[in-house]
Image 1 (cartoon, rainbow, N blue to C red):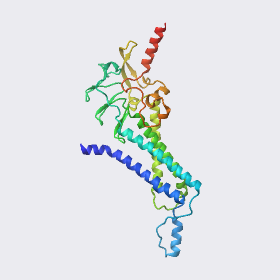
Image 2: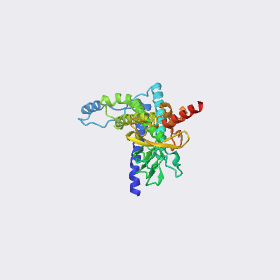
Image 3: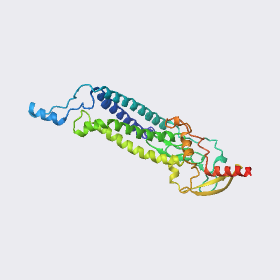
Image 4: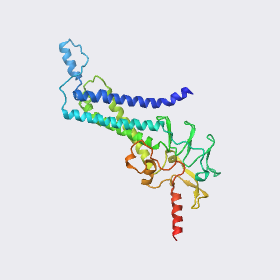
Length: 325
């Protein structure tokens, strides 16, 4: 059991290790030396070798750190400002990652009222129930074999956070992707001038960590941006990753009196009962306060058990029209 738990946490430890290494390289290998010496503080390898051949019989000494005159005040201010913003972005990224890892994704309570459940079994014999949890499955709920429990509005299980992504932490997961893409882009842009001035001019650095970091953050930023765009699309249509692969769903229709009518089978490829429009779909995850949209604080609307649907809204509007007549 202990070994299995350790294996499950290995991807998280890997992410923490890579993040710590990027922080070290950007701060201590790039930013601080640039503030002290400017960007041209590496010795040109070819120049060193030619001078060595003339003065020491062809023996090439190790490259040494050049200490030129102090860079301009404007350059120092620019680098210090870049370092301050880096810490701000890195803090948001670390905070978001902590939240998505440590937040319960949305365990199902035992007191689920069957009258609030619209989705039924595939054979139509009553509402869905989990044979492992011995509990009713609310709408959009699925059982995770890795977490060994049912998750409300389950999107998927992510090994990189050692957690499910569901109703309670889906916003944190999306922001995690967004912050990685943003942080990687920021690091790449603010280190690009050093790469152009040093690495692309075939100068030998005391450490190759900066070029390696530059390549790594570019790869991470691009990959996470692709995933972020994918999940942004799912957010705007109010659909989970699991639901995007479903072909059909059997639902009970709730009438105006609060009771369910005959069951219907919907083709989920052409009909999404939870798609309430872009604005309301966004608010269902991020809430109505724009100041909190990009902070890892809980803002989801509802309880993750009962969801607003197009069908319910249509029935309520029909009932209002009937009363007005």
